Image (cartoon, rainbow, N blue to C red):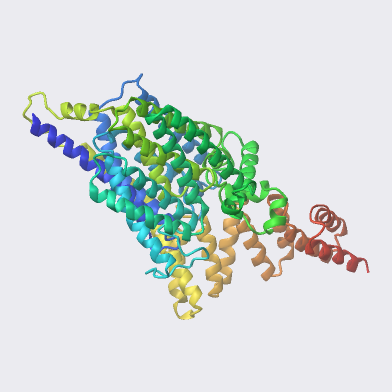
Length: 621
């Protein structure tokens, strides 16, 4: 009997290792032969690895059912509702490919959240107090790798030459903010591993390296996000830790920590004594993104403006102060707040279900913390504090798959500690592994069967995404070289990309401009007009159409497209000015005056206003 229990436990342990190492691999992967080397690579790996994880998940339900009235049933139902409501919102989105795959260089579409949900559910089924330490061990190991790579980048020793407009410390995530936030979560896991009594000495030694090196890389990244994540998490951890040891000390720490958090928030808004240390324009600008997202939600409360379609509508809902302060062409593809993003782009049902899931994780984490003993408390407290750090960054940042996969893993693990209890998972699995005769060995055919079938389905999505990334990368390189020797090769790759139905629409649009650079002007023109027809609210596509029509002197079409831009980008006074010129050239003084009045009313002290006034003065003469 003991041998059989060990065999079942080893099987469970292997599946947990696979789960956590999969999360690590998703964070670490990038492909230098992709047009988007970071986000698309992570999405593809997430979907592929999820197939094997899904097999384990289905197998777990077959051999350990959920009681209908249990908390685990309620938690599973919330996740399934999240997937279902997000799927409905996806089907309602005008650009299905964007909703499914996610916006360019974001990839936060339905498939990403489906993949994260599978990881979450299996973590909630498989993680217990016997194996939760694996999250800390893998976290420290990944932290060591990312810390080393981050220090290499800030010291100018990166083995890869990135086309990078940011700070050099981008890690494996492509952006200093994402890199610092990811390192912050791993630094936190390293800090909290010190308080786990049975953590091996070698991991504590490695944790010290991650903490010191990681903090150095975060500071050198010049990104405040990582420091904010660490601050919020540590305040929570040591406040609760103090309460556990002494209620009076906990109360004092809660007050001091609350004050620190309060002044930090003020500092982010350029208020108070910490403003000089905390304030950064890229953080404070989030207010514009949040308010635009809220307006999107108000305009389409049921299904939102479209899953991951924030970019298409941002300029329509942004405040007039934003373009006057940051420029008329600067835009945003995300609300920089996960909750607002989901409400704005997917609607009220998705937003409420997602909030319910966050509340459930927090409540379950607090319950497990209260019920656990002195050896278990450091395990759950560290996870809960790290998860809250992840949530803190999600309030001011974009969902990045490489980071979010850890947030969903840890959230699922917290529920797993609540659902599985102390030892119950091992007991149940051991008893289920025993056949009625007590001697037969059960062979698990269900897990590989589910994995293979789901992989076959996933490959129909993954292969076009993979190939479109490599094709566009090759086309860009040929166009960038300006060498017509390879133009036929670029055309062949473009035709392959354009023939895929399931591909990012922006990739087809960009292909048109690269082909135009290579001399295929007519084909490029047709591609751009086709993209405008399929997605008439995409401002990039409309601006592309304007550029092509201007090159062909089709000024009637130019006016048509610029008038569409006026509706979708009502505070773009550069577009107003160009449209004014067209109106005046066609002797349409009435429409020109309307645009001039808008410019003078909303942007009176700009160079555009002076030019608009001079145009009409010259016209009158």
